[in-house]
Amino acid sequence: MRVLVTGGAGFIGSAVVRRLRSQQAADVVNVDRLTYAGNPDSLPGLSADDGYCFEQVDIRDSHELERVFREHRPDAVMHLAAESHVDRSILGPEVFVDTNVLGTQRLLEVARAYWQELDSRPLADARNGCSAREQFRFHHISTDEVFGDLPPNAPAFVETTPYAPSSPYAASKAASDHLVRAWHRTYGLPVVLSNCSNNYGPYQFPEKLIPLMILNALAGKPLPVYGDGGQIRDWLHVEDHAEALWTVLQCGTVGETYNIGGNAERTNLQVIETICATLADLRPASPLEPSDAAKKPGLCPDAHSGGRVFAPGAYRDLITFVADRPGHDRRYAIDSTRITTELGWRPAHGFEAGLRETVAWYLDNTEWVARVQSGAYREWIAENYSGRADASL
Image 1 (cartoon, rainbow, N blue to C red):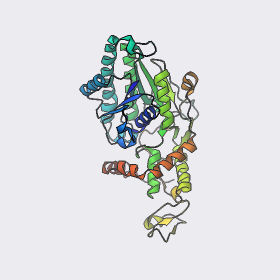
Image 2 (cartoon, helix red, strand yellow):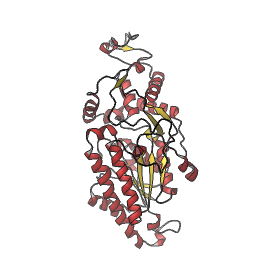
Image 3 (spheres, rainbow, N blue to C red):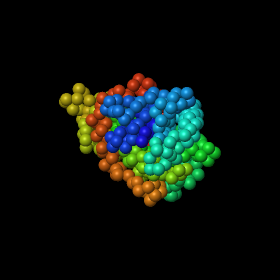
Image 4 (tube, helix red, strand yellow):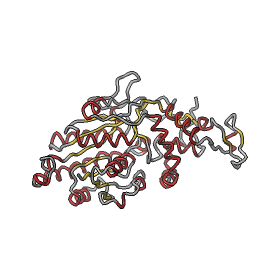
């Protein structure tokens, strides 16, 4: 089987590619534009893999997409390419509409034309007695953010929960979901969809909460917490997500949607405090410059630190409450009952163990971190956080 993965150099996409190739589940054609968040370093060893091919292509470029489909003849598409960071969508929404909506529409059109001509492929070329046209699938990967804000005691999102997106990012993903369903209803394109909760794990770009907090803490920088830190998210290990996506592609019912969650609701503050505790265990020395140390009671200079200070509680001391972002949803929660009962998938990682593994990965992969922390990334961090007044509680 040959799978075309869009966004395969991104965080979730690269986990999917690594899973498919490490288990020899399918040949992979990775289509990625390599924006700031696309990183070939997240696909170690695959350049020499005969079952892997990389195409640096923008999903908005219909002509290049047509070439890729024509040359590689995929049996399925897993569509993960997207602009995906809420804060970036608030500062610049146009690129989110351009990529997530227009890009999805162009990919759907190219996939539809390709799928329709598969009628002519001989039955002998297909597996399990199906024609190539019958076995083709288009799997669209989306987010729980399309459902909007969930009241504290309300039941978790199910597949039929009405859409109510709050951010430009969530609205653009909701629009792309609607397009995929429309291409199924109007043209018959065989699609499956999935909506996931917050992902975490190795190779995540450090603009997202967990890697940002890990790396800021290691550098002795403030750990910025929006508002009171009471926003609740469900956390899903990226390797569990990759396994779930492969299960949906293979076994999901055409035209249906599957919610994928980690059964791990936590407030943002709880997540950050757990990161601090894990770092205190795995890397118990936390550096702070003397000027910062004067503001933190109970810290003592270390003779080997060049004037910097270290203390067991220093990671937690870095927590800094800042002004909340506009339209910040208070709670998301995913009900994964359907994918568990119908397809047999369930997450393998508990949150605390998965987070500890993630922290350890960032400690052990400093070269990967250094390469992704480019000047452009640092400029964005400064733009997003520098204007937020201290809102310490």
